[in-house]
Length: 445
Image 1 (cartoon, rainbow, N blue to C red):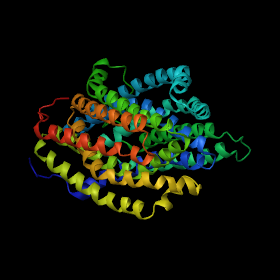
Image 2 (tube, rainbow, N blue to C red):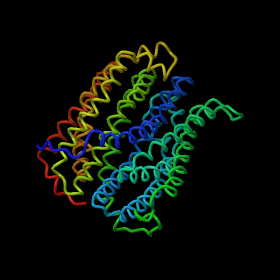
Image 3 (cartoon, rainbow, N blue to C red):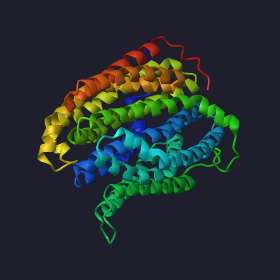
Image 4 (cartoon, rainbow, N blue to C red):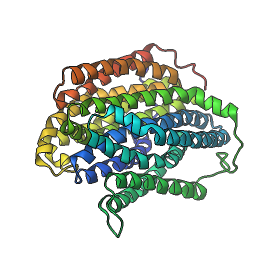
């Protein structure tokens, strides 16, 4: 197990910091919805949790495709085969627009029936359907957006993501304020306004990406200066990598959705608490994902450059630097829980009821950090089929735990969140063993 390192902590941070900012800004979309809807009512707060995770389960299919494309872009970037990056980018755009149209149509046709069968409370179900009917319009914008993200991350031009995300979040805050509460002459749309505002913010994000790319990126260098025809060979190569990530992401988020459905069966208050904790968890989760995503990109570039000996050193560096950033955040949550929870609700009873679950969540990150790093390392090697197999095994254990503890034992909502410990512990064990013993160095993509 080599300890050789190629990157300094400063170089890792240079790449990770813009990714962190971009993920932070993307998460602030959901946080903004929750913060505003927390002032509307617990029904809307709970419904936005269910509908938001339901939307994410579909969105993560597209995000999984973009991860596969990002891995290939990173490999081509490491090989200095820059002109092929444009072909990967455009084939990804074509595919994701078609996928957006399919998922949009299916969502409009079946979401109300699916949610109606799964959600026990009629009031929460009605609000969730109202949110989804408008939120799915954002598929066309967010799906294209993830391909721009794949391009900029894969070519390590991550600063662009920071500017884009700031624009998107500011747009979302403005649109949400206007449409949820009915300001500036607009009607008060409540939870539907949150969905419309988020979709419009994603449209603004795409406009920013297009203008920035045209003005700042060397289009000829990356083969972006012309629109190619559909190349099934290139698309097939992307899908060979990404299809496993797409399935893995969908299965993972669907399982997350089932967790919320299970909690909803405990009552409207536990669901409201769970939505608050989900949003609070976004802060440490973003730090973990930023550094794990950076680790994946660096590993892809290292293997592309024929420098596999640096992979283990990069993994260890990524784990250490993530802990350095995470510990102060978690310490703040533990010491000042009321301050952070007040962002999402002004109900003193709801804040006090949420504190135990927050403590459980914070303790889970001891395992979550290395688990995420190792899992993204597996994906960075291009062995996405293996990553799917590992994830499926972990999720099977996770589902059994959730069903037993929540639906059978009907434990307190704080105990429900110990499912994060189970998931992270199993993921860390499985991925560590694979990276230690798996034949990942010879993977060709």
